[in-house]
Amino acid sequence: MLETVILGKYDEILSSELVWLCTSCQSCLERCPQRIEVSELLVELRNLAAEKGRIPKLLLERAGRIAETGQSTPVSRAGLIWREKLNLSPIIPANVDEVRAILEATNFAGWTERARTKGNDRAV
Ligand code: SF4
Image 1 (cartoon, rainbow, N blue to C red):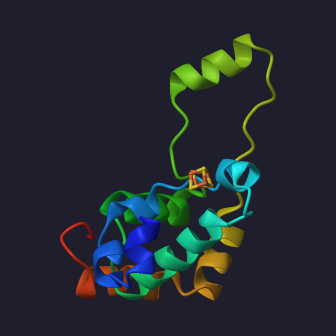
Image 2 (spheres, rainbow, N blue to C red; image 1 turned 180 degrees about the horizontal axis):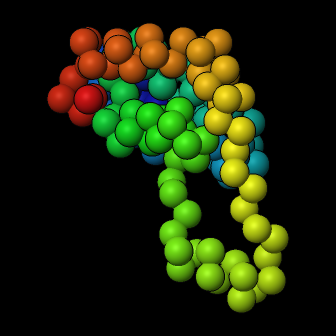
């Protein structure tokens, strides 16, 4: 992927799902002797891809769930039972009004609309 960036093949890399696979775990930064911040590069590439409306459909769906419920993934009944068995504290629901305020301040609706109108077949 870095070679694609170095060669300036931005359209190729911005169309790739590779840029969306980074979890920002920072393992690469910890191991790189040159301290190259790959995850920061990937954030920039994701931002460029999003500006072009190239956001994977799955991420748009999760973002939509966050807007509706404050959670990207609903907690399963089994998960709740296990939490209780393991004596873990209950899950405190997110403040959806605060989540919506953040999404409004960051123009979430604009990003999703761009993905719908300009995106590729991976977008909604
Ligand atoms: S690119 Fe780096 S930060 Fe991203 S998932 Fe891989 S090791 Fe982690």
